Image 1 (tube, helix red, strand yellow):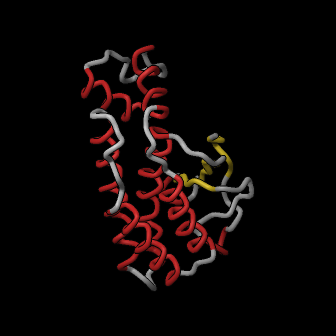
Image 2 (cartoon, rainbow, N blue to C red):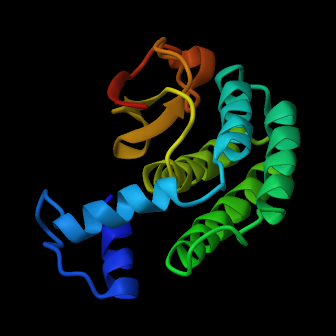
Length: 180
């Protein structure tokens, strides 16, 4: 979240505390405006991400690769014309990183370890997308303390289903935050 507001600050010249917990009234107002002044929706992107997550939960590497290809295509076709000048570079940055990780997942069918590592980075990008542009669905930010020193993912359900370990440690993790 701090990174997003730092980028906003750089683009718009707002002042904020970079290492603090709070944001200025100006950056809060921008964040609220960013969500309400656009017809851009994150739904299709989030749904594609969740399909990858669910495939990795089942340790279905082939399905993860296929759904990653579909997400990559969705990301390539994002229409930024309705976004403000400040929103466009933020979305482009998130989309480019998400495409990069989707490509890695798609290219590594049969290699769950590589897919899961790319999914970890994809989760960071999609979380930034949802934090910046909002979501129309209730999501849960789940956290696994075991994978790579601690990793999170987004889920559409309260039930913990760990995509980093699948059946090996299916319920390892906890809900860190509810996103509405």
